[in-house]
Every structure is written in C-alpha cells, then in structure tokens.
Length: 447
Image 1 (cartoon, rainbow, N blue to C red):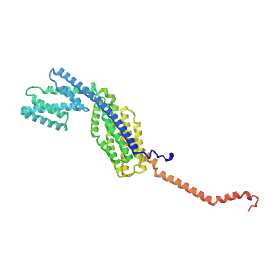
Image 2 (cartoon, rainbow, N blue to C red):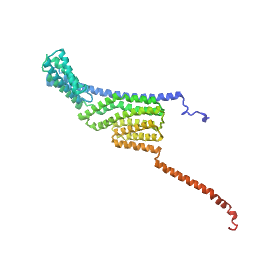
Image 3 (cartoon, rainbow, N blue to C red):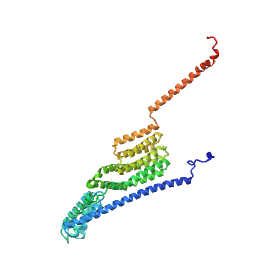
Image 4 (cartoon, one colour):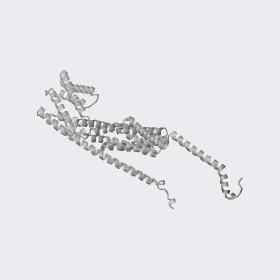
C-alpha cells in the first residue's frame, strides 16, 4: 500500500506549488519592507542632522554679522550659511568658494554696467543676463556661482541707486555665512560619514544582491522574462549611483575637515574602495542578466552549478556590505567569492554553449571585481578567481594528462586480466585435472 502512494515531491498539486511560491514572494516582500523601513529611518536621521546644521549655521551667521557689521538687516549672511549647508550636501567647501566667486562676479558686472548704462528695468535685465552668461562660461554648469552672480547683479542694479555702499556688506555677508556653514559642518555638528555612505549605498547593494538572486532563479527555472526584469531593475540604478557619488564626496569632506571624524578615515577609505568597484559590479550584473536571458532563449544547456554560482555571488555582495559596516575583515566575503568562481568552473566543465560560456566569463569578471573591492590588487584577484575556477573544472573534468594516465592504467589492467584468462583456459584446467586424479594414481608407476 505504501508503494502505491504518489511521491509528494513529484506529484505536487498546482495549488501547493502556487502556495509555496506565494510564501516565497511574501517572505521576500517582508524582507524588502524591513530594509525599506531601515532606509527611511536612516534618511530621517540624516535629515534631522542637516536641519540642525542649517539652523545652527544661520543663527551663528546672523550673530556674527550683527557683532561685526552692526545692527541692521543682515539677511544675506544667514542665507549664505543655509545655502552652504542645505543646497550643497557633500560638496560644501567647493560650493562655498563658488558662492563667494558668484558674489564677486555679480558685484563686478553689476557695478560696471550700472556706471555705463545707468539704472532702469531694461538695464536690470541686461545686467542679470550678462552676469548669468559670464558665470556659466566660467563654471561650465549651473550651481552656486551662477545663482549668486545673478542674485547679486539684481541687488546691485536695483538697490544701489537708492542705497550706496552695498558691495562691501554683500561680500562680508557671503564670507560670514560661508564660514559659519563650514564651521558648523567641520567642528560643531559634523555628520557621521559612514552613516551617510551606508544610507546612500543601501539601495545599490540591495538591488545588486536581489537581482543576482533573481538571475539565478531565472536560470534555474529557465525563465527568460525573469532575467529581463532583473536587467530592467539594475538599469534603474543610475539615480542611486549618482546620489552615492555625491555622498562619497560629502563623506570625504567630513573626514578631511572635521577633527571629530578623523578616526573614521581608515573605514571611509575602505568603504570608498568598495563603492568604486560596486559601480563596476552593477554593470557586470546588467551584462549577466542580458546574457542569461539569451542563454535561456536559445535553449542552451544550463548546468545546475551555474545558478548556484550566481546566487553565491549575490551572497558575497551582501556579506561585503556587512563587512564594511561592521569593520570586519573580509574573509567571509572572499570565501563566498571563491566558492562562486569554483562553481562557475564546475558549470563550464559540465558543458555549456556559446552564450552560457559568456555568462561564466562575465561571472568570473564580477568575482574579480568583488575581490578588488575588498582590497586585492587586480593581478592577484584575477589569479585567485582563475585558480578557484580551475579547481572546479578539474573536479569535474580532469586534465588530459591525468585522463591519459588513467586510461593507460585501465588498458594495462584490462590486458592483464585478458592474459590471465587466456592462461587459465590453456594451462590451469589440465593441472587441475592432474591434481584431482593425483591421489588415485599414487601407486601407478611413473612415466
């Protein structure tokens, strides 16, 4: 009776399969929801820090302006301080100098054209247009320099006829505001650079890890559409990569200017090296997704080691982020990367066609980029991946010399057995009969 029962592993109902897949999707959604909640919490924390910095810088700039320049409407000093912090997160030093240069450029053009053309509506428009054009030619793009050049030109061309001596207070306000902003960022309330980097890197790490697992599932299930969806998800990383580069500049500025964050320099440089190669890895994943979809569409053979290698590479990316956050040595990341390379070598030895071979090659390139991200030199990383992949190949398909040696041993053993059988058929049966008849002929005379 027990033998008549269907095997549950092979006779699973469609409803059970759908329920299992639904459970997997629900678990993934919960995981992503938890990650998204942590990302929002970190964003809220950084937002509160930036707001506190801006408020403190504005109050400090207004106080210094009143003490140095006397009582009055010193509006531009706190405005410059807020602009330094809020509109230039990550590049505050450079934006502060742009702000000062824009003020000086606007004053110069505004005063010169006012003396030549006089004051009036059309003169104001001409002054502002020339100031903006000159600032764009100097900077090559928009930014604090262009905005301050235009704003200062408006101020000079409209208020100078009724109020003299605006140039010097304007420059001093810019100096006070920019200095107050830098002072707050560097000394009074510096942000944690590692938190800034981790917040910006989280979406990139999460997308790369998730889509590598999706590509692995697509290869395992031979689902080309799933691989294409993974490709589209990785293509959508461009805005996140841009924000990550801005955060990298900001964190570098903090560990350079803020004495309270100098002890984070080593961890920052380690994280920065990882982020540099993370962008390359995102490009590798796009290529892997595209070629995996092509491999499935052309119905090429896909050894089971290939999706396993892809999933192991995704686990290595996740572990690399944990190592960066916890300041751990990257042994676990390196172990997972080499396991992925070994599985890729095993997959190649099992037999793949042209597109499958391309997938394995790109997977090995991604593994090399990961090893470089954790500190290995390019030549060393390539050698380690090549060694691990070669070990996987030899485990499945031994080298030709070893195969020839084994074949020679087998041929020798076969020939030895054949010779033994022939000898047995020729001589041993006769001797056996003599031995059997020996006792009966003991008394007979010898021949």
